[in-house]
Length: 348
Image 1 (cartoon, rainbow, N blue to C red):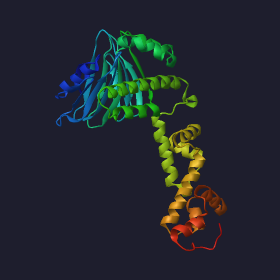
Image 2 (cartoon, rainbow, N blue to C red):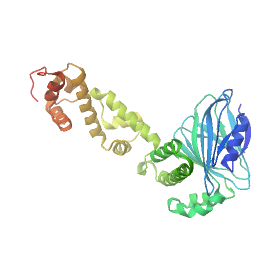
Image 3 (cartoon, helix red, strand yellow):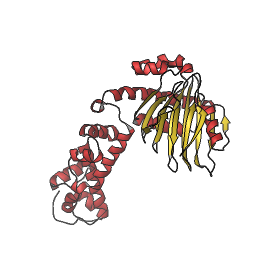
Image 4 (cartoon, rainbow, N blue to C red):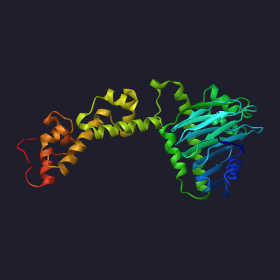
């Protein structure tokens, strides 16, 4: 059973100091940043908070605990809003008066806010990689910025951000986008120093917020009409690309491929165009021709054998595709890399 520990969470520096006290560590502070490394007897990893203007902060947690931990976010007059992006092990989030926890799985994001009656409790598992990035927003201080984001909000979101005293609790989750994943990585990998570092990281925080607000509205349109590519979908598309490369000889149709990775055909097609700049069929053709080039370079197979090895039944069609890609026929390329005349008597 996890220990229930209270930490102040209105200011990200107070939150990080509270976690450091719980884990027996000491913090290093530098201007708007605060961080600590967890002690070996407690686990491994680090916690870092960065505070910006107008009530915006970021929290970066990357650790592995030896014992589970439940963090109760202490109540204050002003309730913060947390937008959490989970990058690894499943996290539990619940409210003080409820037994059941919401699960936030890998590559999911969650809007979370408590109220005067419902403490937010964050459940951190033991012996698993805990890795999440969070926007921590003091809504009272953020009021001066709210008008800048109204075009990316619906009525529900506007009410959530204008609930500066946290009268109503709120929870919503969904998969976060590829744009958000990239912005988080860019923020965490920032090597700038001083003022330019602070400006860059604050800009990334607002970029992530803007992407998340648009993503929330995109979620409301339903799976078939969504236009924004989720990071979880990216991984499924990459799995489909891996299947294509490993099963060229016996590759099934696109519908079967989509079913295998858990996507519908339209999402698979749009995902390939977003990630690779081409349709699934064009990606398959390109993968086959690249494999053929590899076989020419590394085996003694002749052109006909290679044609069937990559799952193409027509030798003339294979020669046409190969020449479009490499500006010479398979036989010409074979003679070039193997030296002399290629094996076999076929033309093309």
